Image 1 (cartoon, one colour):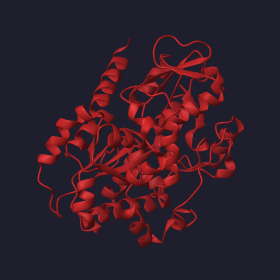
Image 2 (tube, rainbow, N blue to C red):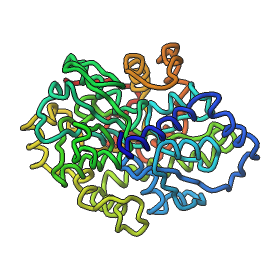
Image 3 (cartoon, rainbow, N blue to C red):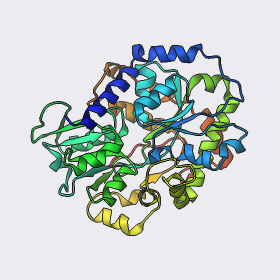
Image 4 (tube, rainbow, N blue to C red):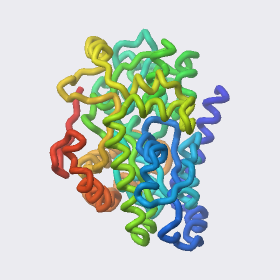
Length: 395
């Protein structure tokens, strides 16, 4: 096993331990021992260097938090989900973006008293494969990397594999009708694809764009073209803050909603401020890769349609998009899909979850509804002004 695969395995085991009631307990005890923070305590953002974090970082760069009357520390970049989750549970950071299925594991698997307060973005991920692969069926007998078992990436990938009559294994050598899935850090995925250690990966941007620019892989499908307008990362906050600092929490969510609206209207500027040579060096990515993700390109969209990476142009999905409202139907569908998705680690609790109860318990939408009202509602994001929708899947 390569060093990168060993490191990825260690990170997975660390995160799997954290996301159990016993593993999280020492960190929760540390958090509970801390005095509740005052209303003036700062916003402490934690993030991974992926485009999923965009609204949190835009709100910092554009001083939107400060305009709301908040103090804010410089955002802290983490290199792995394990590091980010550990810091959040212990209370070192208080506003994070997490993979939406990961919040299910955190709240119900490890009993972390935290809730989803908004979506951070929609879409923003893709299945990228070696250049010679032209169909999901060709992944049979091969290995594909996912960023974590509890990720929308794993859920959507396994949906696609089931449609192609391929089953999933996580150990051993796959047969021609099986696909082996491995957990891998996003930063390791492009090098692993180039070295032919894996046949593909499914992950957040801009790693798919980077693989395209380096000509080591191509986008086979965009996840937003499989599940219309799906969330990937969501904003997760401590329940104690939501209950004991409601005005502070409202201002945080106001800031994120305003940042999403600004990003919608300033996509190229967003790419520049996120880039490695941007003023805050938020990510290690090039402007070129970030522009490929954030800025619409009609000619490239036609090329994707011609080879089937986009099969539903009528959905008018952007490669990544931004809107904050956490639709209950999405959470219900996600929980239902998790019950039919192969997951490593302690996951027995998943089968006992009731989707409707999770949608009302995991999510606290009080603040985002008020924030949306202040900016003119969901119609400002090009959506019907309704807090209900139906989930749409495509082949």
